[in-house]
Length: 205
Image 1 (spheres, rainbow, N blue to C red):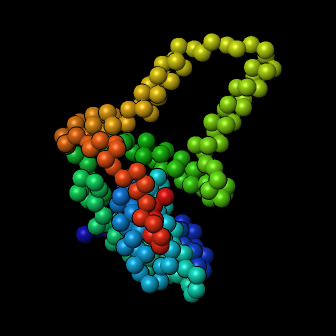
Image 2: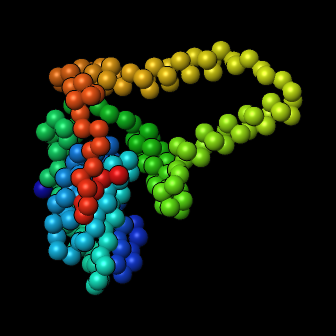
Image 3: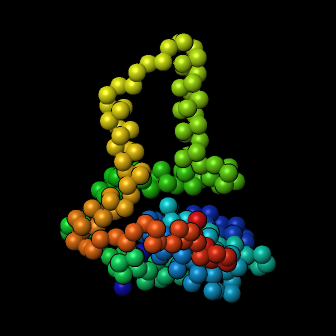
């Protein structure tokens, strides 16, 4: 079986950061991979980020073999399954082919930038926090400078209405996507595990 691509992103003596794009968007699979990787005596702490598929392995004493970790992670990702029991590296059903190559590339690039920003900010903030604050401050500054409160354009109102609908109706959106793929309806949101973290030493953030 051909193993999924796993990249070595950054290497220090006691800290290795890997990237497994196939893990992105699969929180439970990330948790299971983190637990399995943390079972290795040479991996004292494992953190997996479901948003980007980034995997950080740390060790307090001794060095880490980045290539061995990359090969092991590739094996685990190749065996990982999604919430429906399908291999996460398997092709998607024809009814729901998934994002285009351009959309996937853009999303992966933005997710990677966001992960780097979070790490640089010591996990106190990310793009999802900084950008709203920046735009809110810019809007307040514009109102203060012009002394006018302009009425939003119709396309802004349309976008906000759609954004609010998606934000407050995630279960309905998920069920529609699942129905389009020919699957069963999703369970209620309150029936799912709200935390989803595996806990130390292997965890998904």
